[in-house]
Image (cartoon, rainbow, N blue to C red; front, side):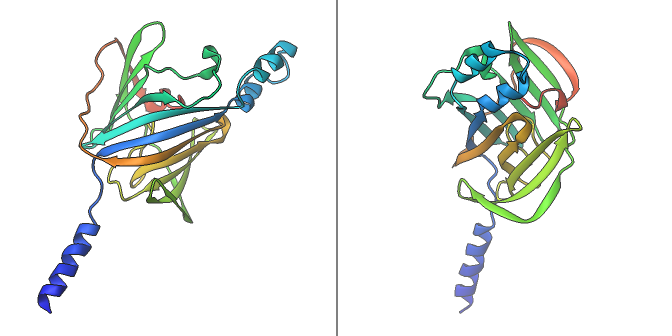
Length: 225
């Protein structure tokens, strides 16, 4: 009888283990028509309407987020678009990279403009409000809802899982009691949804190649896809 109880206890303890390393694939979907209409409004005339109409209504891209030892790297993986988007309208730079050190609350971003730039600083202290009784399942993991406001007016809605023991998420989002697997930013007409979580111990390296520039915190780098 005692051996059965010990086996059950061992199984329960194993079930309580948290995920500490692995790879998450995020599907990033943007309503490009609404985004461009919001940017240009009705002031640009027929040429803008024609240009918008020539683009797909939605853009779809996939990003990889690898995490290990309380550090993470987030970068573009591939496009899922079936119709090509005019490059200067897509707002996606395939060479951009986000590196976050959650334990030391530091970030290093590699931004590719006309050259590579290394932007570093302190991770933004994001104040989240947890939403009770709003749960869902994303990539097979139980998630809870939270929300915040960035830059005084940008509402962000997120779903996080405490089954992954890192307070991180896509780009420089952080500060929740677990990993963010779903994000919606209505003002950007964009959502980030994890499609899969693969266990493993990936190697993560801080980006170093580029012209260096330090900023106060990651608030200056949030908002990019």
